[in-house]
Amino acid sequence: MRELRGKGQVFKSVLLAATLTVSAFQAEARPQRDLPLPSGKPTADAIIDQVYYLNHFYGFDNYSIENLGSKSVTVIVNRTEGNRPKTMTVTRHINNKYTDGKIRARDIAFFGSGKLKATGFLITDYEDESKTQSYMIYLPALRKIRRFAQPAHDDDWGGTVFTFGDVALRKPEHETHQLLGEEAFNHCSGFMEIPRNQRNRYTRDLPTSEPCEHKGKQIYKVKSTTKFENWWYDERISYVDTKTFGDYRTEYFKDGKMVKIIDRDWGELSAEFKDPRKLFWKSWYGKDLTTGKETWAYIPRDVVKFNTDKPASYWSPRTLTKLKR
Image (cartoon, rainbow, N blue to C red):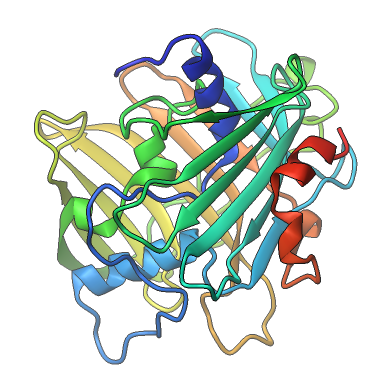
């Protein structure tokens, strides 16, 4: 995969938690914030549109992952085979409530620990499909904001097993989709086994067994074939809940061999919602099957807030420089 150097390397790492952002790679319509639930049996394209809708939290005016202290904070754990795990904590705020026809969403976040401590970013996604996103990054060493171009799809995501395409830039139209059928989900979500003597204050209370809450649920199995030539994968298989459209697992294949998996453990925010898509991420787990490298992001339920009264002005460069660190 192509690597970015210098400031670009900082950019890659800073956007580790930027899972909201989308690419303006092609001038084709993405799923909108008012995307309805499909009636009847959906097509493969409709299923992937729903997955995109969920992963960008379009069902909420705003969505936050707060920091409530060392025991209630989002933790990202990276581990290369044979080495001790490394951790970072992240706080994040997404705003989807824009009606000016120009801005689609804004995402502001900062890192509370790890090598990027006190670094923050602000990403603006535009309604105009031909316009790329705006990336503003606060660099604490300089005490200044810098702008960067958006990364390539196949760049590794802040030293994790994910690429920017996996978590941010891939749009439904970048692939062709085929519905393979329905079946019972037969997997538990992945997690990272961390020996007790390698845990720190952020990882000491993390789960010690794989979550199996979704095992046995009915899912759509969808094959998505990339349109990129000579790409790092040929196709991927997604396991998508038939009721909520939460994508529990994605398996990536190259030359007929599985090369990577990504598991997402989705949680229900409230049974009072009529829309079953009102979900949140409980965890993400990824493993590169060719190297053994793995990444685990864990999001406690009590840090998740939604439809708060934060004003639109919160998502601004000024906030980026004033966030508590």
